Length: 326
Image 1: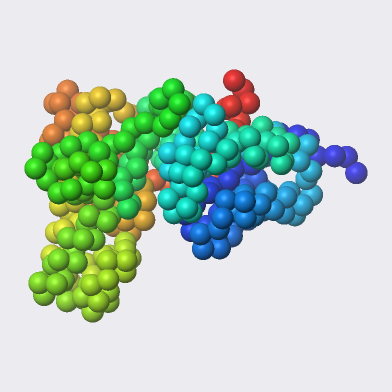
Image 2: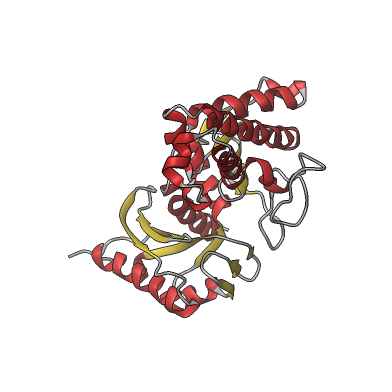
């Protein structure tokens, strides 16, 4: 039997609660995938070994050997040193200072590229999702914090050794609430899912959101995207107002980025946006148009991400492909 040609690319999304790997052929078509949950806070060695096993299992199921894989991209949460290939910290995993690039190159024998999870997700959307056929794509993902990334003419906007675009730490309220970074009034402190959930919990405590109260018992960890959506659908109008307020603040941050980057398209993603897309599309777009320079207002184009969970593995495989070209 003739051996399959090389030019398979592997994307790996190292999430906080799950790991997801996928193979793509030379036409960027996904040919196989594997998903596994992390086992609590795996130690570094156990976690890396598990990742290597997933890659080998994926190749075995696809009847490929490692010599047929042209490269691997890894989508990493947390700050990275892009020059040395080190994962500086992954808080959800309890990892720090992990030489992730060199580890996988040594253990798999293939070229490896690593990138920040938000940057890589935006790269995926640029090539194959909501940002396809655009020159400059800004991605904004409200979650526990607010992740943002920009791809310009196929290249991730980044610093010399690290990712950039910390949009969540734009100051929008000089005397606003304390942010996790230690500063006051950051966008993240008023527009992240965590900030929106905290405001919704206050409303429930005051008796203004009975459905949210009944379903979550005021446990902040339970007030996630689905719970907010259910409360709104059940008639908790104050929860809807809280979400709209957060979306408007997000639009304020987007306006700042529009003034700086003039992106062709702004892609919104993450669980909260996917749960309540109509609210976020309307409020973010309207607020951004009202707050940016008038010359940019008419060109603002806001879309919901199209790739969902696949954005990370697609972007990671494309990152590996692009790294091989350069």
